Figure 1 (cartoon, rainbow, N blue to C red):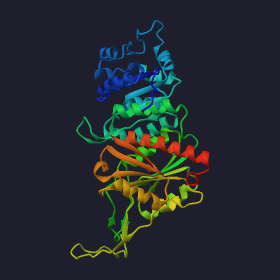
Figure 2: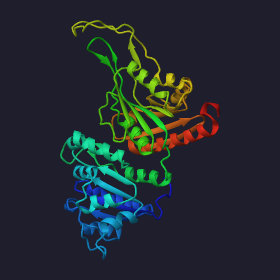
Figure 3: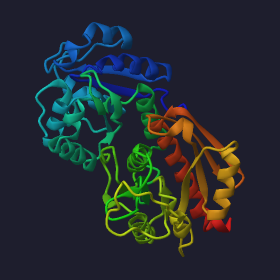
Figure 4: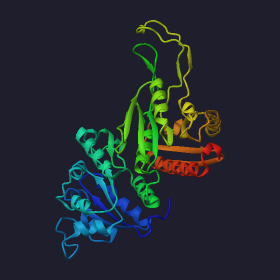
Length: 409
């Protein structure tokens, strides 16, 4: 990470969620990076962590109400946000997100957000059902369209005992997003179009059954979200996702089969600056599809043949976008295998994702290979890795613009 936090002033708003305890660690991390933090605490947030704790951690008065005594003029809801370089709401409850989406400003947090003329970053935290509700999804899309940056939420065990999306992003992921925001100044992918494939395709065995894989789409969605946060127009090719589509995506194209993804990829690549193939594509298909639905009581002998190589087809377009492939590898030397694959597919870079370290969970361990280059990302959260990958892609696009094309460099 860069030293972009030095001297930065952050207004950290804490709202009503059990995840408020993570804000204490967030303050510590920001302080270690050289940032100054002031806390605005909603009435519900104070039920989880008190103002005295935040004042001790930040060394600054806590804004705990619309008529706080932190300043003499009673205008903290205006002055605090305007004095900051960024306003961060972590955790951001469903209630606060709903208020912000429609412009309600009836407490210190929402009033400060309404009055602030600085970037707004939200780290949502709520029950999985609340996160996935149509109303909440409309609200986060609205806020993203208004320019807010969303970090998370992540999936996993929740305080209510359920499993799913809704956990507040880890403090490290939030700090990484702020770092990108401060370091970039202007969004590095503003004006660019990035196509991201995510999820798992399927090929038909018969009229009822398919061959597929265990990819959830979590990594691809993290990459798409990071590209959107970097200012890109993002087209997400969503193949049977098992996670919610992140906020801020401009266009979502639902695909199921390899043929669907091939057609959508080639169509989208025509106007794309970059294509990032994260989706786990079915590698084989039956040489002959069974008719009807064969009975389970009869033995089946399947002869499989390789499917068409989608990202190689995109890389072969003219003109071609900058192409980044993902390779899930399980052999003795996954990096060497991926480099051979990169050369065979004629892509600009390939992200090596060893299967044992990356399948299904929230964390990952990736290696990004270019022509004669290598970068290691991990172990870290998939959101952190996605952000670093998008920074790398932005650099590749700059190089492409300066040299007239990576393949000609």
